[in-house]
Structure formats: structure tokens, C-alpha cells
Amino acid sequence: MVISGDGSSRSKTTMWGWLLVGIGSLVLLGFLFTAFISHLLPPSNYTLIAVIQNDRYYCFLVPLTLPVVVVAVYFHWLSMKLFRHA
Image (cartoon, rainbow, N blue to C red; front, top):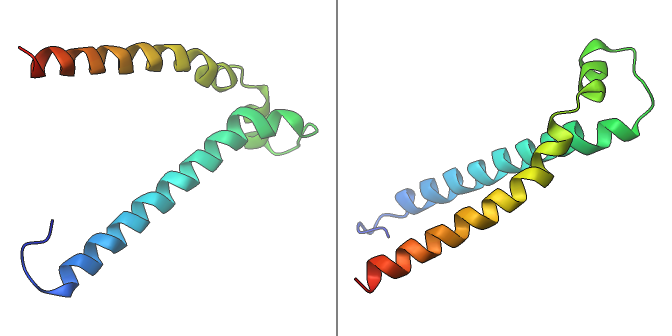
């Protein structure tokens, strides 16, 4: 919450927010290309894209991370409940 009345602080916060959303979107698109889309493309002559296409780590990372995230969120919720009612 902005305490001062000037609008420059609010516009600066909005600018940083959009910048972080943009960076996060670019990282998400890059990961989606690396994990899924590059495997659907035909083999490439470029070494970087060929290395990404032959990688077998990141295509399994997200499906195997989802159960761990569910357990972590449950334990976070449980610890907050225990903290509030203690």
C-alpha cells in the first residue's frame, strides 16, 4: 500500500509488476518450448535446438513435480492452521 500521495510511486510499482509478469511469461514460454514443443518438431541442424530435442530431463520434470507441489501446499496449509489455532 502506498502511504505517500504521489502518483509516481504507484506508477513505478505498476511498471515493476508488468515487468515481472512479462519476464515470467517469457520464462514459461521458453520452458514449454524446451519441454514439449521442441520434441514435436522435426530434427534440427542447429546444435542448441538438437541438444534440447534430445534432452529427456525437462519433459519429465513438470509431471513429476506436480505431486510434490500438492504435498507441499497441503503441509503449508496444515502448518498455517496449526499456527493460527495454537
